[in-house]
Length: 110
Image (cartoon, rainbow, N blue to C red; front, top):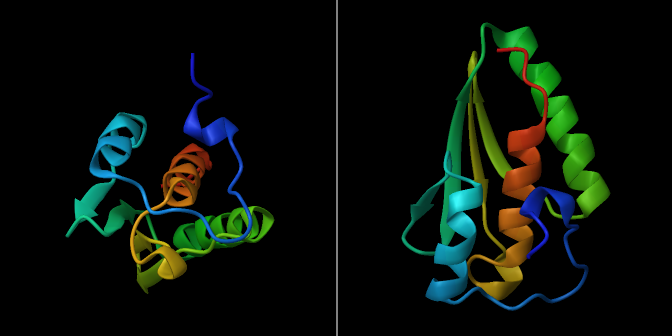
């Protein structure tokens, strides 16, 4: 039995790009995320207001720093758009799926 994504940690250094099969195997653990062009995953989260959103962004930033894998994100008052991909790999890696699962597990005051 495989260890769930949210219980793993991002690996430091250069990480290989996922194959289509590896990506397909990981997606069921992060169903709220959408694959864009096979090279990025995105998710939109909605919050009751700007303050709740920014509290979540603070938690997400602390998580990203602890994992040493950082998302791109855009704040729109009560909506947060998050994008994950690994620049060095030119696409998606296991680190992206791990961070997505960990972001999903963060408490959100929505």
